[in-house]
Image 1 (cartoon, rainbow, N blue to C red):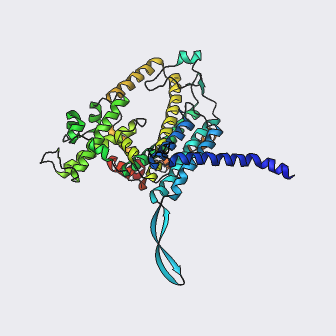
Image 2: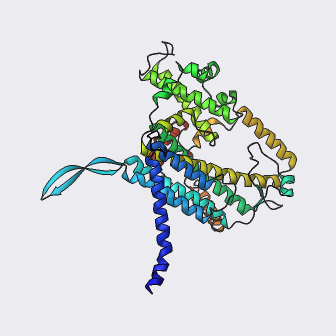
Image 3: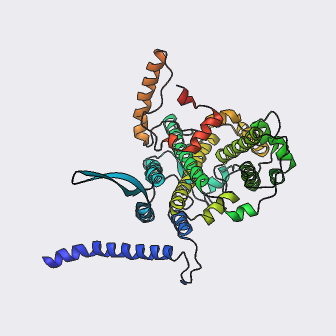
Amino acid sequence: MEDDDKSELDPELEAIYADMEMMKERFAKLLLGEDMSGGGKGVSSALALSNAITNLAASVFGEISRLEPMPPDSKARWRKEIDWMLSVTDHIVEFVPSKQNTNGVTMEIMVTRQRSDVHVNIPALRKLDGMLMDCLENFKDQNEFTYLSKDDAEGNKSKKKREEDKWWLPTPKVPPNGLSDITRKWLLFQKDSVNQVLKAAMAMNAHILTEMEIPESYIEGLPKNGRASLGDAIYKNITVDHFDPDYFLSAMDLSSEHKILDLKNRIEASIVIWRRKMTNKDGKSGWGSGVSIEKREQFEDRAETILLILKHRYPGTSQSALDISKIQYNRDIGHAILESYSRILESLAHKVMSRIEDVMHADNLVQCPSGDLKRNSLKDSASRASGKFPNAKEEMEKINFSDAPTSMTLSDFIGWTSEHEKESKEELSNGNEPGPLSKQPSATNSKKLSYLEKLEALGGRSPSARQ
């Protein structure tokens, strides 16, 4: 009987021992700074952890070419190994005052607790992580759309590429009459839910990057003044008396990712130069003596507004030179973990949204006549080439959180839709505006993020805040 119990425990013990050996190997590489020779030429612990989290996400998630649940093995691996990486944050602490009563005598002592930024953001990021996993899981039972293989004759015949399509991704296939109304609304709901995760991850990542110090190596490579960084044309458009973000963006060539990234790099460099001059950290001034501090701050705000719009219009754009430099030279392990975790969640959410848009595009191909579709496609291409998008002020107002259910299968959605419509009709009949989709709180509190407060200050109060 004892032999039988031992044989039953052996597989479990072997799995535990295997996990322990793997964990020791991973943390040994982190301690060595990815320099397996032991010669001390490795990267810092912060960068090693950041690279480890990034590489783990790349190996587990990959491209996400289909809307389907993650394989159980991959999901289990992700949960296990990301927990290993995040376990480091349990030991990132700060000293805080506390009172201790000893034999009736109250004394004030210093105790340790988890650092406040880590304590707030790690649970929020875990929540966003779970929301994305739940969203992928929701596509388990859907059967209205499938994917064609690359060699499928029907797929090669009917496939009409959009500008942003990638040839290696499978083509979604919808029914001849298109998706049903319920499925179409459900897809829109899933897209909105993932969009909330994307905006939250983007905001948290941007907030963490602003907390990182600017490396001296980046500062040494900057031009002498902001005008030299921007160029005469961009500089004049930013410093005009009446600044219009729409006009500015329409005058810029944003037809490729390289050009978008180049504009971001120029604007970020100019902002760093102007801030250093305003804080007297740079004795060389590129501004005329008649330019007041208020004007300088106004020009800086305009540049930051352009950066925010670019970041939210093109969420899949590569990181800027300033961000890469900050990550490379950062020595704060807490910042490194928060930045890398939020960055991979931002990338994952963007990929899931792109796959949802692929299905919606396939549905539009069936619903719209070919002539109308061609005209719409040409119009979209022209808009992208000229940088013309919806009004910038309205766009800035939309950069906020809205309360919405975060996980819902297609069957749940059918029941929720009818109930929600009934509530909306009752509100309208009483003369009230329709309320939010759900009263559940968001995964993260936007008021805790200075980056989000800045977005609201630039774009005005959100529609939900005015209700």
